[in-house]
Amino acid sequence: MSPVTRGFHGKRRDAPADRVPPGQYVTEGFPVLSAGPTPHTKQQDWTFTIRQGGTERKSWTWSQLQAEPVEQVTTDIHCVTRWSKLDTHWQAVSIDTLLAQVQHDAKYVLAFCDGGYTTNLPVADVTGGQAWLAFGYEDGPLAPEHGGPVRLLVPHLYFWKSAKWVRGLDLLDHDRPGFWETYGYNMYGDPWKEQRYAGD
Amino acid sequence: MEGTAVRGRLTWQTGTVSSVITETADTRTIVFDVPDWAGPGGIKQRAGQHLDVRLTAEDGYSAERSYSIASAPGEPLAITVQRLDDGEVSPYLTEELRAGDQLEVRGPIGGYFVWDGESDPLLLVAGGSGVVPLRCILRHRDRLGVSTPAELIYSVRTGPDVIYRDELGHYRGVELIYTLTREHPPGWTGLTGRVDAAMLGKYAWPAAQDPIAYVCGPTPFVEAVAEALVSLGYPPARVKTERFGATGDVNG
Amino acid sequence: MADTRDEVALDGNAIGGLLHEVFGREMTTAVGICGSCGASRQVAEFVVYLDCPGTVARCRDCTAVLMVITRQQDLNCVDLMGLASLTAQG
Image: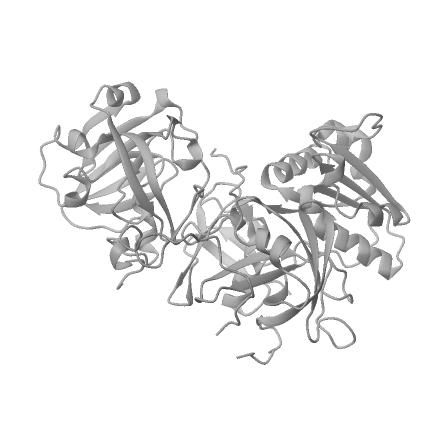
């Protein structure tokens, strides 16, 4: 047991327990968490592709994505490194809008990204108004260090599921671990159940 | 429970703060009293090494950070910490911590960015608080009494940001070159602007003298300086680099 | 090639303590060979991303993932799959 350091509290602010999951603290900043170099993909070079069995089912360019209905999303986000950020504002297109244009009976998706990052999600969790492709943050474009030009936004799960620099979804009939899930992080990642690691 | 130090094992020890020294407006040197650190039979520290620091809140929440050791081998252990506004640990260390406080430390750590008193010409290039391990090297050189030719090229935003200003001016046989990147006082005759190949080509030891370079600072600074030195003929293996960033103190 | 000049990209010096804890010895001078491109470098030269949510070390030459270290229930879990070899010095 480590001795207590006098006067050290960490950079934490109390928040109502119904607002912040257990073990989380509220931050005013927006920490940059990256597992690799920032890709800096230009809008005109960016595409989003839904694939199944290695085949492209449908693809969007940046301008095609902008032509889809854009939603203003206000939500809290929760990072597994224990910070939560309240009332973040995003401009985004719902994954419902995109998946509705592809006939499928997949149960899971694996999001893939520039830089090789992947993360897995149940289809049930990226539909029903729970997940978006976000390209605007607060009043401006989403910055590259925060996942721009476009990131996944799945705020009801730990934020590593909200993949930065997302380029598409692989439709799968079975769950397959992504990057952090391969290294022992939880396949699902519900912050309210503190599902940080496999077995939590 | 305090573990018994096993040779080769790295164990957390309690360090008691013996003094906190104001270096600049946002930078403090923290001197620790750690049993068995200095003196005969003490821990074998090398110039340039790190110290890990662990802070623990009353509810058990803890935060760990790694800092360069500012003190020379044989001296009481010291680190120099710059406050980062968004930080979690550095504001505590620079503003709250005072003599008599205790926190956990472990070290010394690292064997790459170290200098053991070799005679090859020393080129030290610092960006901001990257000067800390280089100051350790200069102190070590001074205490060893060796005549290794040395120069320090130190890039800071403004004059008042210079850490260890008085001390650096007193080292014998060390060429000291400041460059101010943001603003400079009227009458400033020193260098201005970022460290680049042109500046290094003019002031750094020529590669033909077989110098060894130690470059420490924020990542973009280190990348730019290391590339410039290699372009001037420094073999990559003779350019030792250490990068620090703000992130280590932003994430919880 | 992707940019490793970001402020968030550190180097292997930053995980000297963590690696010492895991391997029981100084490891920043250990030489690792990248399993993807074959580049040989000291651990101190690896590109390191901290707390993201684990720690990731990448090849400075090709950015392939070399080491992943996660902390689970107070245990450090280390994956060295990206390394063809890792040889401690001295």
